[in-house]
Image: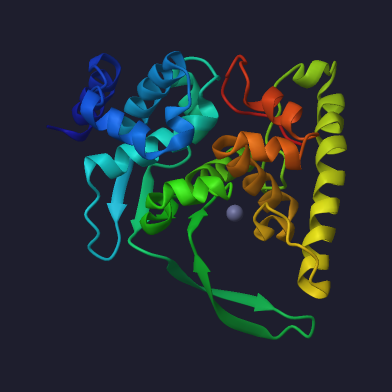
Length: 281
Ligand SMILES: [Zn+2]
């Protein structure tokens, strides 16, 4: 088929072809593997299933180091990746938040990336960084399957690498990730965009500073380590990602640790008119 007809055919097919449903058996198994998914209401579970089905239709999985990505693994990841979008309207609209990339690369274990950092004297140092996951702006998402599969234990600790990397994608929709994704109009009753961002930072800045201080005190003076992953103390964008992990997988504990962040995250992830992401902050 000539390329133009091929393109046309693909476009027609993408608008008329039904999205394949997720098998009921596999879906139930996914819900059972992740306590925070089985805790959702039946209504939310069916919304999540529709989102995950469209996600699977739009995304491609690639197994690194000969890892075979089974349907069950892909469904596990799709369900968790779509959790932040659950209340943002129709699946086709909500999934526009993830339309800057197609591929999810799955590593069997931790991945090691080579990093270069320049010191104050301008000397470049190379070092290896161990990664559980990584989100690249307008690029693929990388996840460690070993970490994804260890769901129950991770949820108790408030950890979830899938939520972490996908909320980085939300944060990146407003440019460099800075810990504040684009906020919807009228966020927390704000009349202007500026007031919305003020409401956001009024909650996040003190929470981040307190958390950083607690992590530093634990590392230097041996005080009890905070419950939330200390990696969140490395930057406001990592604090946002780490806080979202805990908010989605262990809301009860997160609410006792960060009561001021719960209403802000409820307002952000709650029902809204999920238009195409836009806006700068
Ligand atoms: Zn991160």
